[in-house]
Image (cartoon, rainbow, N blue to C red; front, side, top):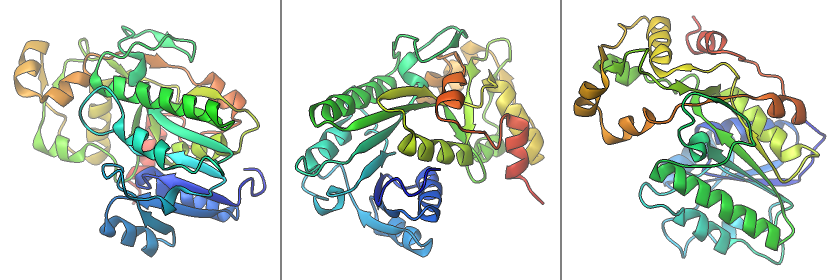
Length: 295
């Protein structure tokens, strides 16, 4: 990380990843504020030594003081759960003080904006083609942020992130419940990144000399979704989940679970590694799972 590139950074939606980013930035001498939606979350941040403030983007009249006068902003807040537009991003951008805008904004998007690529390897040049409402909401947020930054001479960076895993962020409850998975032959390709590596990538995106760029974020070692659940189960010492065909999956899985079964893609990470100059601590799932089950 460069020497203290910003005096102040706001992390919007400072949860699992935001807390990790905050610690990295604080170690570099940055003043960090993490915004959260509840008093309980604010208390947890303060207990962790992170300045925290309340910002409820579902309440348009809240949070004016929270989002003014920061050198950089990392936006981690997810969209609301329904609709094709990210209404929370709309609210947030309206709250920004255009007289003193940040120098840079980094948005954590998702790989869902690409839609189903039928298992093909893709790069950042892949056309966006979301197939789900959650993909459309993320694409809308990207477009809103880029337009706002362009209008106010603010640098932007987009990180398109797949599944995040790490200590405390594994599908253990699902495995204990015995929720079924598709056969490996029917299972879509998925991509992932360890939470600690994603935090380091966020810092790199904030501090990089590159600007106004899109990066696919992954460890570069995709596998099918069923293989992922099997390997997590094995590492946790849990039974592997039962296997069903697509017809049965349509009857027993939730709508949300089913939506992930229709997107299959493999994401390369060459641009990420080369331009942001990051070195992954957990370059594959085996290495990452070891960090989750230390004795």
